[in-house]
Length: 355
Ligand code: NCD
Image: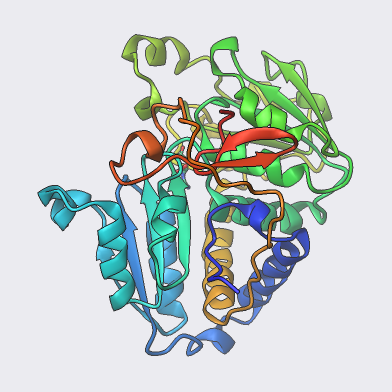
């Protein structure tokens, strides 16, 4: 059996996600019971892209479990700045550590990195692609605050094109019964087709709208995202988009009694500060759930309790070139093209775009 890296949630069964939610809830209630679980273990925290919550919550989680942390938060201070490639960096770092957390701006970079790691490697966000540990945090938040993960109506608002948090959470919600998603965005920032294609045959209803007003009264949750400035090639387009959606008290006058607002943060201006004191604002609770979820993930992965799915439908071949310029295959001179067949479509093995 291979090492259980956490790169994409679909590599694990929904039962295992639910299990992590239970462990995280137990950690929240009995924090003291967990304080020596990872004594003498070392986490390597490698952040090639800015982060506050994900990086510090992983580090704090590992310290709270009794372990120790090494790493860098800026590739300029590592040998990558001398020209070392990611494969060699990971070979070396996995000699020094028991588990590695990687955030990287290039799509598929964490998958590629995992191929060279001798220890479990966790994807802490790879470009616009995926953010599985934020999604597990979001699932824990929803389960704790709404009591269930099915039969929910959720509005997802903002930069649906670039936000990896959105791509990951929609895929995850499609694995529970009877959820409905309102995709709230401008036409410039709609959800990419490769994510929509993934959702065909899944048990989820999607409806695209352009205003919050069209759906707010039906929502159990409004999940707001930042317009992802760093992912735009044209700054003018970012400026045109950045202030289109602002959630304020006026917008949430007609909501269901159980209505909640989530945001993975950082927030810029998309949620007005006047919302912070309302009972529906749960984005700072979400930060706390993130700490417990990362403790649950680290603990399970270190105790070999996460069992990765064995796929039969992955067909590796190197003849197809991925056309996504932000894919690792086009950004690392040693990463070769590989494909996989999913739902009868040939996809890039690293970034999931159709070939
Ligand atoms: C998000 C991320 O990095 O993708 N933040 C986070 O991890 N909590 C959201 C964002 O940057 O907008």
